[in-house]
View (cartoon, rainbow, N blue to C red):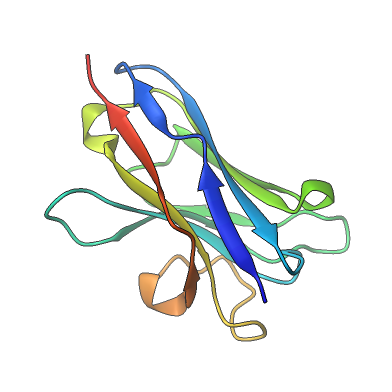
Length: 131
């Protein structure tokens, strides 16, 4: 029974940085694609970044939404059973609750960022970018 817990959110000024963590428990994340999504107040969930399941070297292939390209980096550390989202050059429009999620095991292994492809979600962590 895989559970996901996000952490690392907080208040940061525009141009600042945060690193979010998605920690898995109860099962390994190695075989799962993992996605980061966000939801701002009054808006639908949107994709941010995703990463494929691990290859034989322990890495995965990332994919990014246009809003994240060049600023955010998704990575995985299988030894810690954790997926990270490094966020740099943060903007006020990045303010949202950020979630990590995985698909049903065996259904998706590629870096597919579609919200509909993901079945199991963490509780979210709030990111606020404001002066």
